[in-house]
Length: 444
Image (cartoon, rainbow, N blue to C red; front, side, top):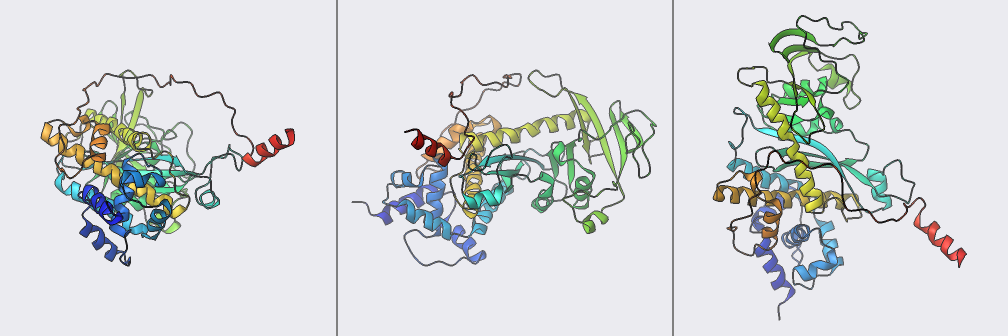
């Protein structure tokens, strides 16, 4: 008969081949986490946690079947609660850094590493602690909805690896937490993001850190490509005139301009930091039309700190921004394929650990895809994410994955943004569940 210790050792051997036990123990020492010897120590607990997430975030009570070990849900949850949150953060960074060292020069844009940033959201159980920490949508009455967190992620454009991930209260703007993510990048890196990240303050902070950006211009920013055009000056903006000063044209819809620091400080920035920004910055504005079918946006205007049009042609910058959509695909894999759309932990600390474990499992899947792509001679984004995930679920002790499914190359394929399957015809919950039960009892 297999003992619990033997079963846990098998799980460790099977799943921690990607996360060596000595690395986990070393990180425990770095974060100052001490523990005593027990069946569910940090190494065994992380192995079970990874096993749980890789199998669609299975229920804790299901782990005894997945691991073939008589581990109760209560013991496993207590072991997970004992682990330090910083340990999970460092695990994600360590795995990501190890892979980026191997793929340092893969997918660079004229020698620059490229990273994507975007926001999303996920829900969690309706508990008082999570309601207070994250909040819920305003259109839902108390007791009728679920807490929703704002998710910010930054991914490596070449490999798809999650470089950083953060959960914040639902009503958190990306820019209030994005500057703290800049240290994850190195001088010369390029950040590609949508218009939610486009502001004078953000561009100035990126330039101060030696970073570059390719951002979609905010919808309220006026951009005019007329040579020698006038611009708004002084404290009051002139309606219809751009605030930027024209410097020179480098193309029909491609120009170098001077952005001035606005008078009003953004709410996410302190007075001291705002005053430390340069009075003006030189940036490049460019615009292009999107003619591919299936795209909602027909005209795109970008701003970038990559000024040399000979080194960075407009069409290449347009294609670079077009690749930003890959982070939306990454979110779909995380939330739908892997099941991160609804987390299960009932405490704020547990939710953050669960989120980081999803990022860790996602990065391991990406590592498998990179290995398979190199062996099969195809780009990494052609390898099926689902097939790599399935192999990782049943990898065993064999470190070399078999040939994985390669998705067909169909750049012209597009699907309408509609759903075919109809939802069930149930009315929405508009009152707390206790009121419904009281009504049923009174009717009886």
